[in-house]
Amino acid sequence: MIKYSDIDPRIKGFIFELDNVLFPEKEYLYQVYYLFASFLEYTELLNAKVLVNLMVQAYEKEGANAVFNTLQEHFKLDEKYRFNFEHLHTAAQIPLKIMLYPHMLTLLQDIVVDRKQIFILTNGNPLQQLNKIKHTDWQGLEKYLTCYFAEEVAPKPEPDIVHLLLDKHHLQRRETLMLGVTDTDRFCAESCGIDYIAL
Image 1 (cartoon, one colour):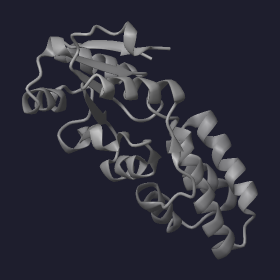
Image 2 (cartoon, rainbow, N blue to C red; image 1 turned 30 degrees about the vertical axis):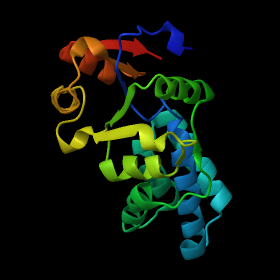
Image 3 (tube, rainbow, N blue to C red; image 1 turned 60 degrees about the horizontal axis):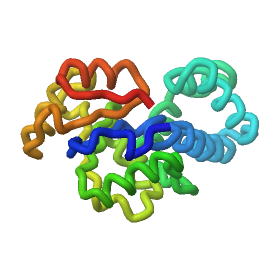
């Protein structure tokens, strides 16, 4: 696990993705599934526990994009419910705060103490990603975060949003570090000429 002491002290700006970098994506999605299952239990008299289990299994086997289709096929759900499912992803008031990975919380705290800049640069639906940010327990770090939604310019690995960030915050490429878990982030960093650490 990466520690702040392992990072070049000349770095002034740290760029993070959200999902599976700062916290597990499933911490958000499973709560959305719970809320959707509760909704279907009320409207269609289906068993919420069975629904949640099926959605979680679909997510773990095939990914988030397969969840509604799996549910629809299994229970012959009306297509109208897709809107409710997708709307929950962007606007759900989830019951539990999303917790940061402990080692990432420590890293963020160390960056703040050293007065360096923290950027969240995330792909995906901006409304959904913003909802995740709102429901994360940042432990007081939220005032030190600057957030960018790549979809509003061009999704990563396209470098446009990173160039914008560097220019706006007067950062040199050599002073900036991207940390991530996907090839998308790695390719983005490479195309921008900034260092990358795979977590």
